[in-house]
Each structure stands twice: as structure tokens, then as C-alpha cells.
Image 1 (cartoon, helix red, strand yellow):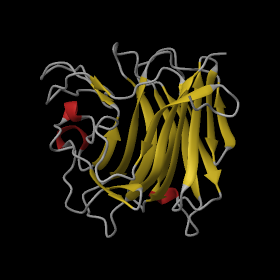
Image 2: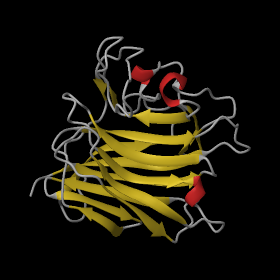
Image 3: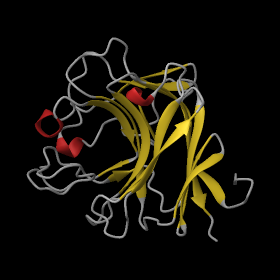
Image 4: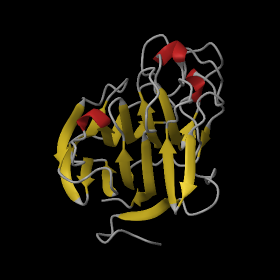
Length: 259
């Protein structure tokens, strides 16, 4: 069993991208399909040089024009579930009035309750684009819906030298036990090159780190399983001159071994 140097976490999810095909035992390659469909939300990606290249192409359709306008997204997630067609029961209800358009049987490839999540990635996004890794509750009950944002980078926040303001923190959504606590952290490194982003999530709170440096601590903690959401977005109707891309070396999940 591989454990972290401090002995607090054991490796249980190790996603690498050196094969010819995406490992479907780890990732579901679509985005919140209950509010649209698996076909319309299918991710655009390539495995090349041992990395995942997750991108939004110029010809990619809006993922849910009914509910989210012209937003386009490529996303890999580690779980999905919903109620029946026509119901409002589905994960990550990001606005009022959502209706299930394609029912999703429960499927979870990785949904830890506490742990350490790590990613090494390069964010190559311009204005009108966003790259991110976040966790959402599996929502067996609607209130189990908080979000842990490991990192998010808007292209508009990236300077000419590649340095950026990087977001991280927690959002409550429908979880009454969580208070919104989100920070945009100045990050002097070139985010277009690979960097390490991590979150340590225990009953005592959540700690966020960039390249091994702690950048935020939150003294609250969702107490239910959460799944991973790895994504890149393009906002607005105009096709990008260069496809927004998130280039990922690996994603790792470590089980919390207790106090």
C-alpha cells in the first residue's frame, strides 16, 4: 500500500493517461448529462505523449442550450445519477428550473468521503475559457451538494507571462452546513505549463495547495462522498481561434487513514 510521507493517506485512485484509450473504469466522459444527454455532452479529448488533452473544439455544440445557453464544455467525471425524466432530481443543480432530460442510472467509479486529491496539469485557456478540477457531492440527498474547488483558472485571469489568479475553496450550493469560502490566489508560475494542485479533505477541514505550498485553509468539511469533475469550458457563441485545453499528466486520489 502506497502512503503519503506523513502516513495520513493511502493511494486508491491513480489515473494516468499513457494508454491508447481512456480508462472507462475511472472516468465517465460527459458532463452532467441528466440536464442534456450523454451524446450532446460527450467530451472532446486525446491521449497523447502520456497526457490527457481535454479541449473544447470550434465545432463543439453547447452542452445544454436549454439551461445554460452557449456554454460548451468537455468534462470527465467519476460519477453520475439522476431521477426520472421530467423530474428535478439530479446532481449539481446549478440554476433553478432544471429538468432531467435523460435519466442517468447511478454509476460511481470513484467517490471518496475524505482524502487527498492531486492533479498535475497545464491550463491553456484564453479569454472566455476556464479550466478546473472540482468535487461535488454524490447527492443521495439534495443537501449533499457542496463543491470543493481544487483549482479553477479563467483565461481572462492569465497574464502575458502565464502567471494567473487561481481560484480555490468551497461552495455550499444546497448544503446548509457549508458557508461559501472561496479565494482567488495570485500564482506567479506559468499556468500554461504543468503544475501540481492538491486538496486535503478531512473531518477537521480542507487544505488547498499549489506546487506543494498551502494557499488556503477552510475550517469546514462536507461529510459525505464526493466525485471528481475535471473540465474545460468555453463561454459565448464565438468559436475560439485556438481550442481551450487542459493538459493533464495525472490525477490521484488518496484515502484518509484517520486521525
